[in-house]
Length: 87
Image 1 (tube, rainbow, N blue to C red):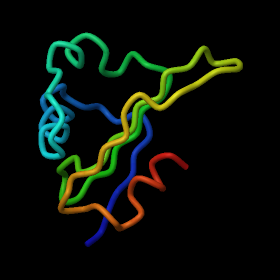
Image 2 (image 1 turned 90 degrees about the horizontal axis):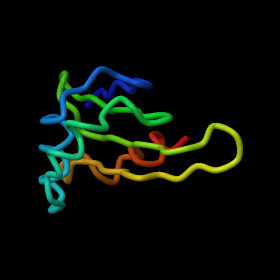
Image 3 (image 1 turned 60 degrees about the horizontal axis):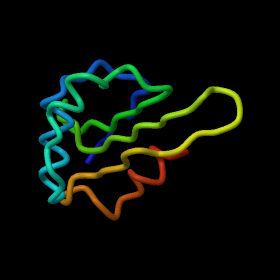
Image 4 (image 1 turned 30 degrees about the vertical axis):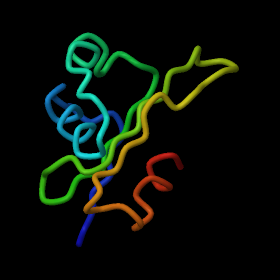
């Protein structure tokens, strides 16, 4: 399978929430309706145009940063997607 990685892709909250529920997390739709695209950095991994991996980084842009979300759809895990998203 071919994967496409994008830095700061245009995403809909529903895309991220669908991915979160696929791994057993709550959708957090209200959170993503307010914060998606407003953090320091985010990246996505796509397969056939569908979001299959996502990372979100919160930072002050100077000294501190943390990964708030790192999620890979179960059908696409163990293929290096998470590692590549963090890289």
